[in-house]
Image (cartoon, rainbow, N blue to C red):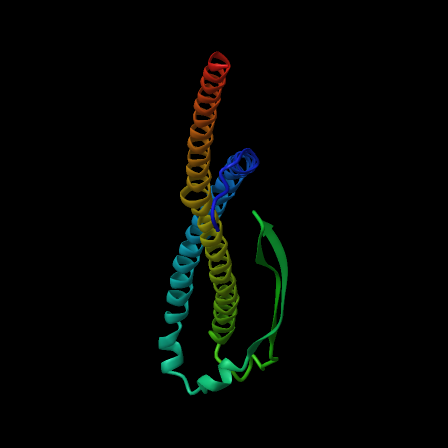
Length: 204
């Protein structure tokens, strides 16, 4: 759209520029807060990965017992199942993030007389791994949501910094130059008109 070169357009562009400059600091603050939240979530996920390796190592130490046993591995896997996962929503700088409230694991009853002594440890280890995997999935989802929010707010900050503000400033300069030229032209025309009027008066 063609830029109008008048005082109303100049006021409009100045108002836009003032609005952009007023909103930009709050947008940039939100961007910084989301970046910090994303970094914290990534660090937390890194800790979860370390914990996951530790849990797996604990479970692996029970594998020799399983290998030398007549117990069916499928029978052991059926001893636990996830019955319910309760989540709540946390608002972090406008991003809605899932938080684990409770995980209910159901254990199938089994006879401790017919199964080896290490089965109890195995079941506890598997339950810990299952709980951890759920926390890991939620941690990954938090990072995904924060990543999307951080990208969006960064795009908005860039729009203000690199497009809207420079464009408004350029428009203001262009209109100001045009108005100054118009003012000078008006003064010149006024002087010429006065000279012409004086010459006409003298000749009369």
